[in-house]
Amino acid sequence: MRCDSFVLVFGGQLSFRAYLRLLRDGRWWISAGLLIGLAAGFLSAQTTDPVYSASTTLYVAAIEGGGEPGQAYQGSLLAEQKSRAYAELMSSERIRAETANVLGEPIDPGVISGQASAGSPVVTVTARTWSPELAARIANIAAGKLANLVSELERPQDRLLSTVITVRVVAEAAEPTDPVAPDLRLSTALGGLIGLLVGVGITLLRRNLDRSVREPAALEGLAGAPLLASLPKQSRRQAGLSPTPDGSTGRNAEAVRMLRTNVRFAAGGREITTLLIASAVPGEGRTSLACELALAYGQQRQRVLLVDADLRTPRVAQRMNIDGSTGLSSVLAGRCEVDDAIFSWAGVVDVLPGGPVPVNPSELLDSERLVNLLDHVKRKYDVVLIDSSPLLPSTDAAILAARCDATLLLVRHGRTADARVEAAAEALRRVRATVIGAVFTMAPGSMAPPKAHRDTPAQAEPVAAAALSRRTEEVTQSITVPSPAPEREVTVPTALDPTPPADPVDTTDRTSTTELPASENGAAAPPRPQPTPRAKTSA
Image (tube, rainbow, N blue to C red; front, side, top):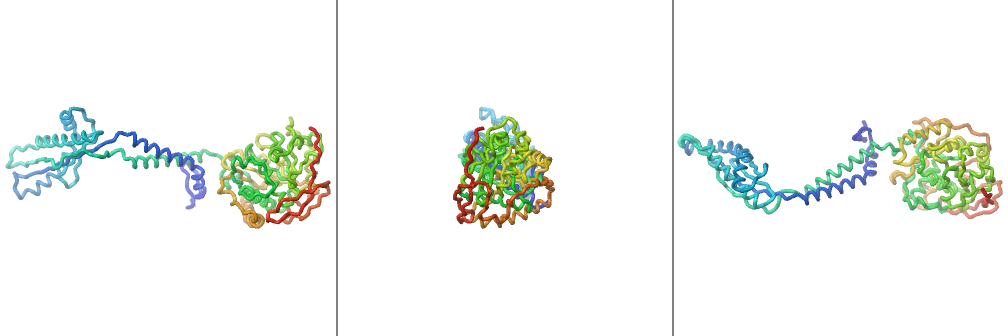
């Protein structure tokens, strides 16, 4: 086993970095366990009755043969031996009963105890109870009863020939001022330690019971494709905002730009015009990524079309704040032409919304009209991004994947189960879809690229692309990528050329022009022809 790995409590193996990430993900459980433990220890110390301890010191003396000076040493050795036996007598029922009779109230077992140190004739009688006055009285009475018992047991038959053993009180017990229990600091610290261990245990247990995909290596193995980007988790307010064409410099925008570059390198020289954004289940950020990636391509002065092919729950129109009454479903149903359903958004991206929700979405997507539509838009646009339904609930996404040049598989970090990712990848393989990469969405901030300054994306992107290209090549060599679908014989413009034309020419009717925002390197982008909003045909 590698030295930089840790074995999980219930089996499995984690690297040191993954172990730290696990503790960071479970920080709320660990913090809650620590706080609850500290509070429980503190409350336990505050609510427990105090215990006071009082001690009386006794001295055991033994005189051999009536006090001959030469036998004093032997007497001291005998006293040391006897003291240990007398300390054990302090816990006897007789001492406790006689002390209770004098005291006038019963005494619980364990209240009176005795202790003698090795090599010392001193016996310490200790009483522990809830009252300091009562503890002192019990200790003094029990010491006197022990002296009487020793006198009775060690009474000599002949003082001239026998040993005389006496027990004398050296120091009587005084009333204690401070309780010996509970210890507030010790109880609080012990409670915090127990709570911390419980929190760590819950985190480890959740990790072993959790079957979601969290590690890049696990995602690459399940998807059969390299990880191209990790999009950071955004707040609910940020996720609900409509995209803006001003070229954001946040961490999410930088991750989208990195994904745009890595898609080009992952293509391996193949021309990719139609790119499907797919996921296994709902709620994995397909629509948000499709809109942001379309804007990222548009900022490169490429002709971009965003198609909402999720005919069951279309959301692109709402996300882009445009009219969605006419769209893809209207075109596939023959109620309008495709050019009449396309909107120009901010002069950067053209959008084909989903349109009205049809009763037969799978049949519409599996029709010849969709093939003709894709052929038509591929001749007019450099990049066509398609948002689709989830792969597992329906067959819509698999139909689209078979007709697109490439597919991106989105997986929500820490939420999508590994079995669902594997099933989604298998569904794509069955239709011979070309999965060029996987994307983590809503990933922790540590997995996302750092926030860039506004004048750096264009400069930093080639460096990041080169590094991630090497990573893509390594992953591609270690996994088996399904063979791509056969290319259709259509004339497709060069979509992802590393040096896009400065002023692309379009043969279609694009009469209106709109000033573009600044490019990624800060320079003003030259204007390019833009499509005017087409007249809408009522659905």
